[in-house]
Image (cartoon, rainbow, N blue to C red; front, side):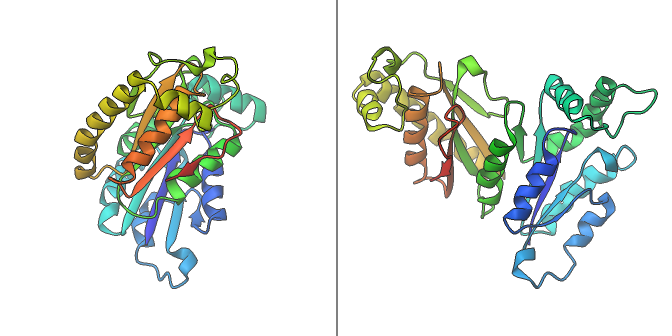
Length: 290
């Protein structure tokens, strides 16, 4: 049985993530008491739809059970064929905005604790869980639709315990992805943006591919990044790493980073069984896996 544990700070999207997994056939349990987590493995799951189970564990289980929770999470791989701990987070400013707009009550607020203080306290309580996470997702700039797509891509479609490698393009003017493990800056490459006929296209379009593939600098940088990752990614896999994100950034996240992310994903699907690609700034483009 596969188990996905969803945790994170309140307001970061845990309920939405759990709902996605439920829609995709996972047997989902919200706010499961910590001491019942190990017992799940012993239950009879005869129905195929219960071969995949997802539970949310959050600050409502804490603070009294934090030490017990970390001990249980550490032992889970001994009981399940595959365990993925997913931690969702967002900046404090965005969390404050989300609670203000929805008028929801934070689980740690009371007459003596303000919302800002509750968020700070929650951060401290959940730090041990965050440190155990196999995958951390920053939802600061995500819509509900984007979060649903990412949970489907990165979690639901990860059907083996092997390390899942995500190549993600982004634009520096929109900020560096906070959940990236490696960040490569490709802004030094020739920019198709300055050619009027290429400007509205993306790195997935044939004209952009032809333009960039014909540039010696692009080929050299691709070869350097590929060689570096070929040397070091197997070391992460050997240390039981479940997820790894390689972020490729250019100025706007439309041309160079998209092209190189696609090309790297295509190259690495020969090396790893689970290679995915996502283009953060291409909002209208469906994300997919290779």
